[in-house]
Length: 249
Ligand SMILES: Nc1ncnc2c1ncn2[C@@H]1O[C@H](COP(=O)(O)OP(=O)(O)O)[C@@H](O)[C@H]1O
Ligand SMILES: [Mg+2]
Image (cartoon, rainbow, N blue to C red):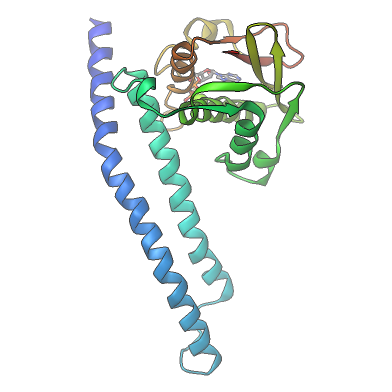
């Protein structure tokens, strides 16, 4: 009974996700289009103000905010699309094979994720530290691997905030002959034995309603499975929480 209700909820969530993709893409395109014209309008406004033809009522800080809004729309729509990809892949409606497979450097992808990571502030942005012990190449759906790493990094940054001096580390290494290894660790609260049992279950979350979706870890596990790799929690790591992704070499 409970399982049937969960199944219905999953189906509804997946259908909603599917429906939202088109309007989201439109919002992104509208924002990009508006941004183009906005720059012209802005230049004209500034010229008109400088020769006394416009009132100049808009303060420089307001102009700056207006410009930043387009960046925020871009960031939020990209993130929303990522959640949709995750739901569709997790529910099996979209297969990893339908995404473009590439061969790419792990350290480049992790560096890119750290650069474009959807951080809430500068503190969060500067928290993750990257250690490349030995780089390796991954063959797989680049976009989905990026999504998986973004998720693990988001978790690490979020949960490490509970520590007095938060630390988040990403280590890239090779375990020859078969595996390339990415370890993401943080010095947050660690994971309770209760959570351990459900960690990789879809929609399992300990966050407050409206904060987390509980899709991240189960999605990451699906992607790693499709890549013939794995993701596990390692308990003998130097920091309290350590997720280890293994990619076949
Ligand atoms: N780095 C971490 N430290 C502590 N708990 C974690 C960490 N990563 C994941 N968790 C636990 O696993 C749950 C599921 O994670 P996830 O699938 O990413 O969903 P969400 O982040 O939306 O809650 C989290 O709600 C949390 O309880
Ligand atoms: Mg998460």
